[in-house]
Image 1 (cartoon, helix red, strand yellow):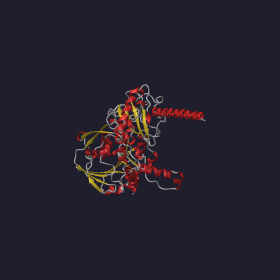
Image 2: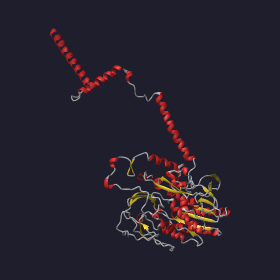
Image 3: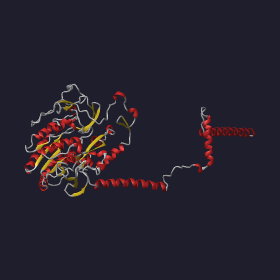
Image 4: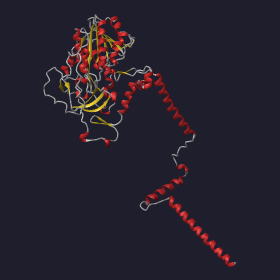
Length: 540
């Protein structure tokens, strides 16, 4: 029995010894897991241990930036404030979209905006009605032009400019060397004139444009340009088989031609409107037989600068202008901008990157009007010349980054004779008097508004001319640059944009004792919905 007790006691001691050894091993493993030091950085580890021990000695007060408690009253209050502010901003935006007046015309794009569609069951079942509603709300956002300008300004804060092109994003992805397009920013524009015009003045239905004008990159179908074949004062259609299209959205286009960066608007007139537009002019002349009636379907940069290879239309702008001209009553006096501007193609009569003409081009058209009206006309040197930097309309409409820093010079001419200008709304209700060309209000992003502030106002100009001649101008935005050039020719001038007129224009001309009525707009606008405003204001 004694031996058994001894054996058990010895056995228990051995078990306890094994247990203590196991505990020591476990404690050693825990220490190793807490601080692991690699053989390659013992000093760094010791440094970390020293710092950690220093921090631990400081206690709880050593943590200067403790993690915020998401459930604390302060954090809950901050969350509620954030939700309230975001919700308030959203609610204000919704109310503004519902309450603020929606624009009907875009001043920056110079076009009527979408109108709310009329309901028909056919459009409803086809989905067109709901699509048109969506287009209406998207196109007529309150303060549309201001918001677009803000967006353009905000975008200009990003990226950087390299040779006139804005680089945005990962620079490593930008191709370099010969693959980049070389552009210039010169203010003079070489107009290459090589192809005969497609239409003659006496044709009533010009033949369609050649279908060979397809791809701008194809030069095999285009004959080489003849050298020095242009007679003085003649015009031949510009061509460049090597013109490179850099950007194309809708009818807005940016292209490189002969080393110069251009931006313009491709022609898109619809000849189906031609007879109605010409008929409206003939009706105007018939209802105002004692007045001189003038018509101008103006040709634009598209005719005088844009290479013919880039246009893909059945009829050119020039051919459509001739088509309208040949349907007009013989008593209507026509300002043919092709004949007027052809002798001046080497001058700066158009912008490089805007759909409008420079005022110099408008001056020559106004001179032709004065000649047809047999009234005096001031020489160009009698004006005060001004120059400002501007951005073209194509950039304003498309925000194409390649045009962001491609400005050019806007040259304008301020008449020096005495005159006053009263401004009226579309109902011919007096609003205020203001300068005709308010230079102090000049903005590079809306430079064409220098002429008469805005198209939405009707203007009544009283000049120091004493000839009992009263001119009524019915127009789109294009002839605006002509008006300052006519203040030396007529005693009174009424300027009315056909898109902003809520009264019968026939009665108006009679009441105001008009002696001359000038109808002017681009050929494309004449052959579009804008042209339909003319017969409308003749009948309301």
